[in-house]
Image 1 (tube, rainbow, N blue to C red):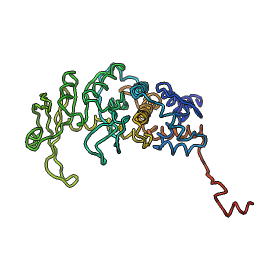
Image 2 (cartoon, one colour):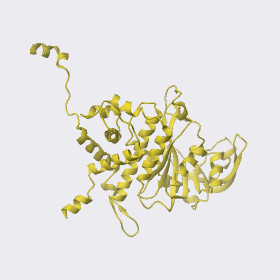
Image 3 (spheres, one colour):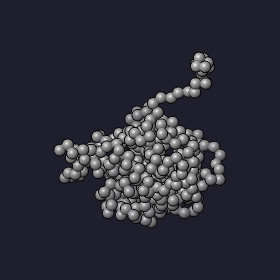
Length: 391
């Protein structure tokens, strides 16, 4: 019985081995000098699990190469497109069984990380312009395709947004990742960032069921002309672009009373573009909020992202990719090891193995390999009164 329980237990060592195996199998790095590729990934995973910089992790581990050595090896990654493909391959390798050959609820969103300073020729192709946030209009942008299913919230693909990418192209790149997985779209949730004639036209042409918040433009015309009354309703709207193209779609206007929340009263209007999605006006807002679980993926991702000030877009893509991959690995462990099959659906003991516990497992396992710094000392010749007494 004891041997069976030991076999069923998930250890910190097994957690690290599976994580490093996933990274080293799918992501190719050419390391030279003091360490091999597995050691490099162990250091990166340790930094991610602690939300630290490479410098902080290097100083905290006793037998760890210097931060300059680590950065040197990372700087040798030169192919952005290849790294992106390898990260997507790694993400797909840790998708729980049972998602393929079925229709799933999906979401696509943009994660924006502020960029400051003057762009170099190397950085310019990967800087995305958007509305001002945190004192800048320039960002590193990462679009992700995310599956929304109870117990299976995982990232299916990531796109490091290029300067030349259109919003429709970003969505096309991500949806193309579904072909290898045999996953079909039940409905697709999108962020208001991609609200445009081109995107709506393209999704309707592909006959993809979707829900997307509309941007309320114009003072009296445009979307704002429908923001009246005290009852929710549906209507048709034709939107035109500056290039002279137009598209007609169904708008759902949801009236919601503020009831003094945040000191505000009156009617709040929420507007959605809805295409071939089976739901009702009464439930569209709640289903969008609950279904758009990609927001939770970004919160989880931010708990295991390596901190950095580097402007190298390739290194940044690697760090962001590792954070999303760690979340996928965690969900896969929940599904494969921390659950039991039962009638009506698998029982997942999520409270037994939260993401923070997995990150703690990874940190402990790496610390055992490299040993942690437990004391520091300064050169004796820097202490005049001690060095003179020793002479």
